[in-house]
Length: 223
Image 1 (cartoon, rainbow, N blue to C red):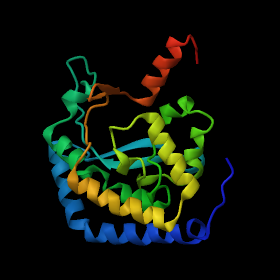
Image 2 (image 1 turned 45 degrees about the horizontal axis):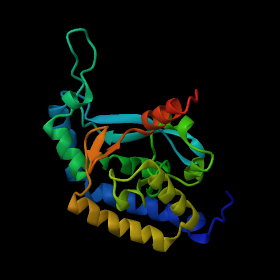
Image 3 (image 1 turned 180 degrees about the vertical axis):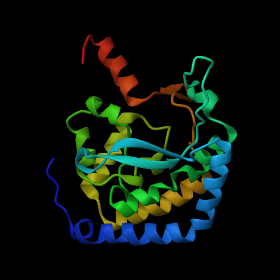
Image 4 (image 1 turned 135 degrees about the vertical axis):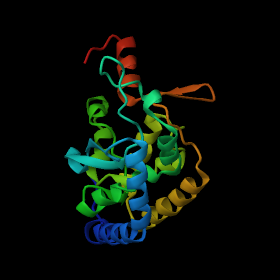
């Protein structure tokens, strides 16, 4: 998929990202400090969580978030299931999107943009179609077109369609639309779920690798 890189994307977007994320970190620094202290207490240790994610051109970087699950283990030393490690504090962070604040550091580093396709798990990469890989032709974002179009209640095919639409039509006006819509979505706290497998209106939403592995298995395809 050939795409033309416009003036805004080439010369302006990164400057906006750096300036706005730096301003946000300065303004939110008191809240940042409070969440570090609260997270250290609630999680009984390191309040931060990092995970490898694919960035632009699928270059791997470490995404930084506030930890929303504890490291509680069973008698044999194995981590408890996610739903048992997700405490009330973690649910609060996810439902308010406050767990995303440390990603401002990723934006300052240039690993993330304010607006762009959300960086997904590295384990999902083998399950993309050839066309879907083009979602990585641009820098991933803190929020994106798919996130303001239903968040968790959108199929993977629709999410990728929206991601590719963003990549194709990336512009200042589109970024402004997504930015303003993101504020509305966060304040409304709509379509927010904390489980990895979601049931909504009779539809089951699963992790991409699980969903597509099951689909391939049903078709007799081995990967």
